[in-house]
Amino acid sequence: MKPPYEITHTILKQLVSISEKIGEINATHLQKPPTELRKKNRIKTIQSSLEIEGNTLSVEQVTALLENKRIVAPKKDIIEVKNAIAAYDKLNDLNFKSFSSLCKAHKLLMSGLIENPGKLRTKSLGIAKGSKLAHIAPQGSMVKSLLNELFHYLKKDPELLLIKSCVFHYEFEFIHPFMDGNGRMGRLWQTLILKEFSHIFEFLPIELIIKQKQDKYYRALGESDKNGKSTVFIEFMLGVINQSLEVVLKTQNKTLTWEDRIILFKETKPKSTFFSRQDYLRAFKEIASATASRDLKQAYNAGFINKTGDKNTTLYGFI
Image 1: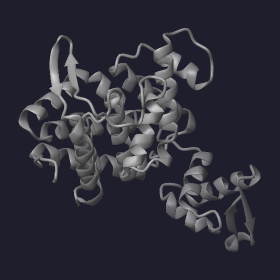
Image 2: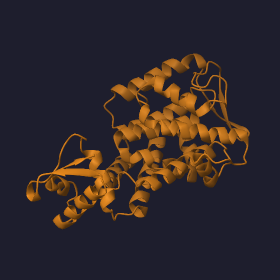
Image 3: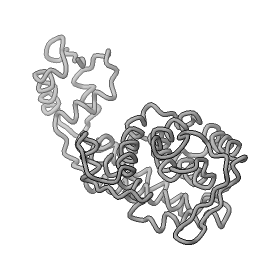
Image 4: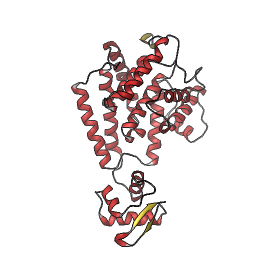
């Protein structure tokens, strides 16, 4: 059965805005940030997602753990961060449509923190916020069938992946299929689904914006529970995605070096395929022929590429 939600005017506006921003990011070659920025964004993602769950480690402490340095902090918090680093490092090995991948990711996130990580719960579960019971999850006996329906929707429904990512996130939190770790798992899995839509999302710290809007995040989950459909949560999460893309456009450096361009170009070309200067120019329409020639000369001198032929007949290949 398809999860219940409606496509509202707000959702349509957000989808248009997101598409425009992704187009601008692609046009300015910002879809894959430099290595150092990717590292910083990954750290923000991990620290923010875990802070929402009560982890006390700072960005600096998470950075130290990522660099295999020792820190003084509660053992549980350190394990949570190390597990999250391992899970996000495995993003490219996980299949967003696979139930077994979901269990594998949960095992990575929760090893050493709970009994039987990666195993679905069989007991009843209530979620408290402060002194109040915020949500009563479906009975343990229903979890497997509800997840099967959710994955069927993810695999078979023709809905846009952007919307599916939000629906999955909400429905996953509603089902609460594991005894613990559901919040961080829901956020990780939405990132995995979004990465399938566009590689832009692999290193986008969406969790940082969720943390900044934490009260609204939980309110959107609560309102969707009350309404019996995920519409409010979809609107909220598309807004978060939109804002994260806006941050990329405002803060990332749009001036690419020759090395940035060569690395970006390499990712679009099969290793065994030779290319010409014209092929390179078609990928970077904003640069002049002389700039393309300099890029290729510097890449050749630096040992990135080899070449064959002469002048206008020169062909290049990545080493």
